[in-house]
Structures are given as structure tokens and as C-alpha cells.
Amino acid sequence: MIRRVVSLESLGAAIKEARKIKGLTQAAAGKPVGIDQTTVSKVEQGGRGTRLDTLFRLLAALDLELVLQPRQRPEDGRQVW
Image (cartoon, rainbow, N blue to C red; front, side):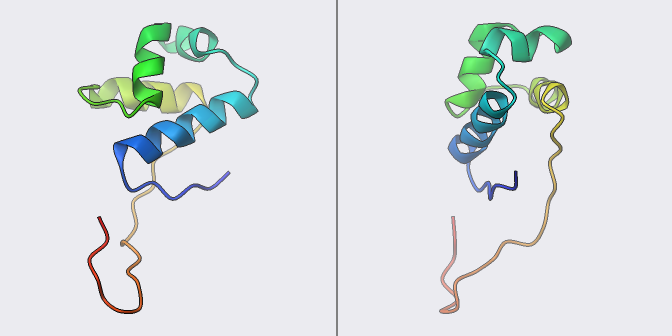
């Protein structure tokens, strides 16, 4: 699964998709790394205010990693936010 993530909302959607592909509930996804179901839900909904260490623990629990690369821009040169 490769997803383009450009916002907190798209990151949350990608995490939710990965969790569902693995057949895990929110509680089951967070349990191995000490994250409760409410926090997993918050992350999946856009995660505003979520600590980075919490995010990385959840990514690890789902066997995901965050990869940074230069942003792709439209051919007309407009800024992409």
C-alpha cells in the first residue's frame, strides 16, 4: 500500500486503511504499543494535537513507516498545499 499523504486528514485515512487491511480494530491496533482506542480514532480523524511519538508508535504497530520526499507539483507550477 502506497498512499500520498499531504495533510493530517490524509495521514489519518492512510492509517485507517492500513489497519482495516490488517483486519484490526482500533483497540487491537493500538494495544501492542500502549495506545488506547480513543487515541487511534483521533489519529484516524486527522489527529490534531497528537504527539509525534504516539503517531510513530502507531505506525510501528501497523508495520508502516513515514517516508519524506520532495512534493510533486502540477505542471503549471501552482503551489500544492
